[in-house]
Length: 321
Image 1: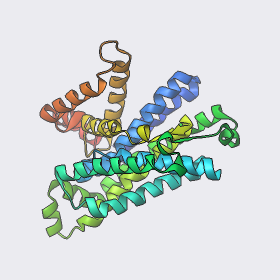
Image 2: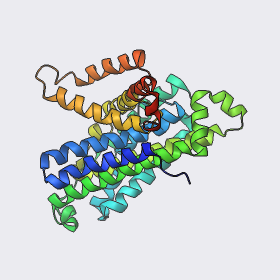
Image 3: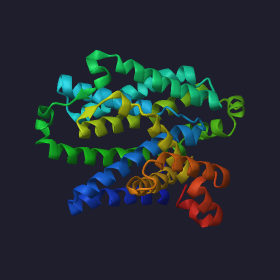
């Protein structure tokens, strides 16, 4: 097993430092802000395993966030399961669904795959809206008694925060090890030239399906934590395509195919989004503005912030791989 490099170490330390700020200050406002920031880092880093390493753009990746949320909330509300095993099962179920879907839609490439992922998200959203056992269009609301095993809602919120921090650290570490592994080299070969990778003996179908499953595992857990903290889940929020666009934006902004890129992109996006949402002028236009920024990135800075910095300052490559 490869030893962690300085690039992984500083990112893990930075995430821990950011995550511990609300714990030390006991600030509720900071806790909510950092919770969203950690969630964005986890979602962007998980998508990067697919988008960054294989080059497959998924506009419907939020479907696994929604699936994970529904699985976990159903297990907690109807079967009294603890959030931790429910979260893990949610991630595993999301990964299983992704692997099964991958066997079919990963035969497509480019825009065809991207469009297919949107179709998958909308199909599952429509299915969930019509499943009365899990609340249908109204969704599921956790009863207040569901939080008693955790010492009440306030303790449950802090537990959700710690779990999000743990998942964020896990996805960053896994992303780094995937990139440095033989499996990761196969994914990068697919990204650069899939036909050449096939001719070199890479089992592209299995590699892509496994990458898709792994990139779905973490959003499944993130969705479980988020909706447990909120106390309810409904289809419109769980499968909102805007979040998929945000995930792509964060990966592209920071730099796809790097471990540091999604981390930097997520923090930058959270700050941009936070400013726009409180601005009287731009509060209803933050998605449109993000789209314009994404277009400018693709045109003038296609490797994102990390690629730009490494191009200007080559010595930074060992810190921003």
